Amino acid sequence: MNPDSSTSSASDRRGTKLFWQIALPVFLLLLVTAVLYRPAAGFDFLTYDDQRFIVNDPVIQQLDWESLKTIFLEPYAFTWYPVARLSAALDILVFGHDASGHHLVSVALHFLNAAALFLVLTLIGQRLLVARPATMSPVLPALLVSVLFAVHPQHVEAVSWLVQRKELLASLFSLIAIAVYLTGRPVLSTFILGVAMLSKPTAIMVPVLLLLLGFAMVEPGERRFAGLAKLALGLSGAFLLSVCVALLVLINTDKVVGMNEAFPLLTRVVLYANNAMHGISGFVTLRAGSFHQPIPSYVTSGSWLGGLSVVLLALLLLIAAGLLASRQLSVRVAATGFLFYIAALLPTGGIKLFGNYAFGDRYLYLSSIGLYLALFVVVLQLMCRYRATAARHAITALVVLWLCAAFLLSSKALPRWTNTWTLWADNVERHPDSVLVNYSLGHYYMEKGDLVRALGHFAVTMRSESETFRIEPRVGSALFSAEIYCSLDQGEAAIDVLEIIPEVGGDLSQVDNLMSSLKFSGYDACHEVVRRWRNSAVEQPRGGT
Image 1 (cartoon, rainbow, N blue to C red):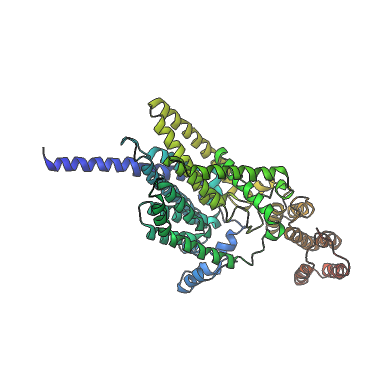
Image 2: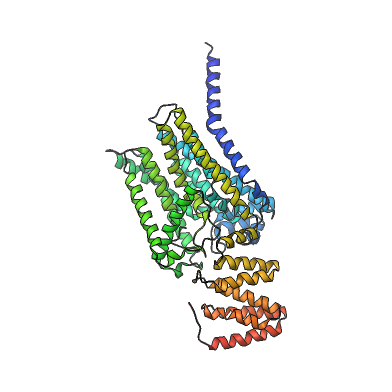
């Protein structure tokens, strides 16, 4: 037998195996992602945050040494996402203010996330199949779960909203760090994890996943303590990095005006439990949340429904923690995935609120990796247990049907992200009484010159009985409405809407800015009417809620 032909044959077999196990699955992920998100090329910048953080950020409009120093050393609008900000600067350098190019980059990053997830799941699957027959492969289960990640409706928000580029980058570098860690290079993994944290600090929870994965991989026995000690030492750098980034974030966001003061800690814990359960149910039922999800009334009212979320989450946590002690590696890894999901939601799940909203699907982009890991273990074990052709095909068919449903639902969710109007119109249809949604849509119509519709949404904002803790949108609606009425020479109507400011406990000094604007615009008569009302309102006792 010719040795050269034998070597060539072995090389051909390795090339064929590489194609089927890596190249073909990655190509399928690219194809599915491209087909689903092809409408994104026609999406626009949103007036909500896209304009502020991309179009109107003066630092990233021209990329040079000074702007690079500013990007990495100085926070912007009380946020510090240097890698994500650098990404936006590179987009502007290449595409300018052509939104389609920015969106296509986000779609490409989403594909890379799906491919990186496929790699991580394959590596973990190989560990799980060590004692299995050589014919068993984790590639098909890893591909199916990665396709679900690529087409799941919960990820449409993070991919379609340009300012959420930070979610895509943090997740991508986190997955790469996990893959590198699984190949036995903890120092390089820590460095890559640092890049993930500089993309978005929520990646500070990824070391928890690495620790849990390492714990799960160490088999119970006499030498387990030594293995865990070595594991903790190897991850010490990653945890130290997480602490440093967390402190930087707390310092830079200390001045952010959010809703933390409006709710006691217990209420925010209930909100966190509700959001965590909401994410799990949406993951299973393929439900995409709304852009701005108002805080449910049962969370703030102390209803038993809020307590039920806490009880269910606590029960699931206890079960998952107990499963970590299982003698089956697959059970321990599945429990690890669920526990990481819960831990990764801690920074953004509601215990500390960074904005005027309850929750958003964008916060599930990184944290849901834990759920995909748990799902992968389940699918892999089912395929291993039912190796008969008919049973295996039935399991695959069921998963494929689930994927098709996810693809269709994501296709339906995508059009709402076309532009600012489609986004807010969808949200006001979902939450017709929401203060924040109506205020934002009213402001949009005001900028477009549709004053009648603007007044209608501002009126809903001022008089809505929901979200009574929101004072700023009500005050803003009153000021904008008064400005519109003055432009229409309806001074008395302007005074009627301004009355809402003392009623809700707003700051009357904000009326001074309105008066300056009226004077500048030449509305002298209305300016005088507002001035007299302002002086009389100061002398009267203020209301409040």
